[in-house]
Image 1 (cartoon, one colour):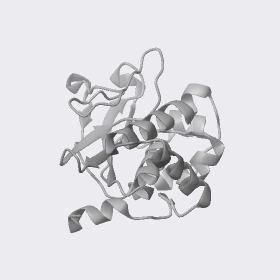
Image 2 (cartoon, one colour):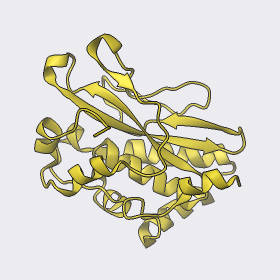
Image 3 (cartoon, one colour):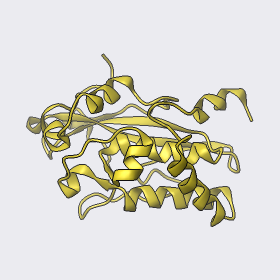
Length: 199
């Protein structure tokens, strides 16, 4: 494997796939997947559909490290991205982090937030793709695709939304600190999310 990819396989405080429960979950996906694409797809749909987005289910619990997200079954997009990365990294698939700046509502007056999703390197196709396991609703719909980006959100430039098109090996420390410093996910989601990734 290219040495540049190794940083996208690291275990850390937030992507703690050395946790026994996380490793067992990753092993389950490996056991039912015949190919690399199957493994990524099975992992993606598990995180998208089985781990609930805090706002969608109005759950106040704040999770951030992979083991807690898996145990509690809930988290905002940043936390779900941590879990997706950990489950893939545990199976040797490089996975990173990407972001978008979005309005909280439908218009700029509602404020802005940073949305988190993932990058995944597929060795079988020798390319990076972006996947968004945020969780679907009646108005939000993301799917697995290797050909096009079927993400949960499409930025609206005229609303001052934009896509960072980044590929970070580690979760943003700025975003992780927000999760670590708060105990009410709903209040945090409405009032305390940063509107830019950079300092």
